[in-house]
Length: 356
Ligand code: OGA
Ligand code: NI
Image 1 (cartoon, rainbow, N blue to C red):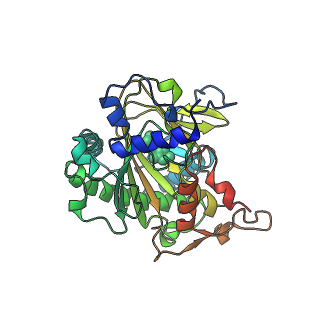
Image 2 (cartoon, rainbow, N blue to C red):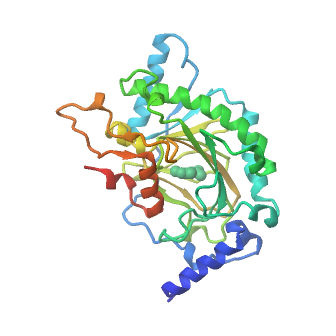
Image 3 (cartoon, rainbow, N blue to C red):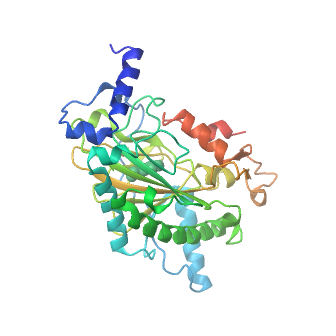
């Protein structure tokens, strides 16, 4: 039996190496430390052969009929799956590939270089660590992450690691433009004017999470990312070709297969809240794998959680009727994030806490 005291000491020892899960793998471990061992999930059935929709974004700015069809596709996917992939989104393949390569290069730098960025100070705009919720979650994940706050005010370029600096700025410029298109389509899917969600600042902030999932010697005992839904409004995810991302659909896990050149889009908690459950923030997870590394980049669109942004979010009044009363109490993006981060990934939804 491992005592609680041992667990905390083990977590600290691991954290203080500042070299993450990658450091364990480089040291040649063949058994994973106890604190990565995931409690077995109950009651979830095997994978279903259902496919997440892949939507062509061409036509977003063409005639009304084509745009109407596109809005319908985005609406159906967001209501039924909470997830879809987009192709023909206008971001060149080379930019996607270079972004993934940049994340890999950073994580494969010498420990001495990476250590300078390793911190748990979330007020910093560049934060590298392993498991943001290391000391709070029931089990650690087989993953290291570099988190960069790119909007509304990005860090000065010199604050970013040199090996991924230029591509991060370039990639996020494209993602911000794509974000405007997606929020327009989602506004229309809700029956609102196209600029609605952008006007209430759903995409004013952009947090970029660059994940590195090293190969795992005992992948069945742990996970890359615990089952969770995302805390922002909308997430745009770029994944490499390894696979392992799964989404809950009718209580079954379904795979989100890597499609070269595609981006995975998912509705997140705050969009479910303001849409009063019309759009779904669906739980997903990443399996650990004996092959790897796997690299992904998750861009979280959200309202900046600094003190100057105190916008209150409630279910959108245009969507509320007598038969459809508000399901959530008001919150700020900051309070929502504080609650979410404080709880950590424990398999429960943060939205429940805000439900009326
Ligand atoms: C996330 C996430 C999935 C992935 O960052 O919230 O779910 O494939 N990432 O890394
Ligand atoms: Ni997620």
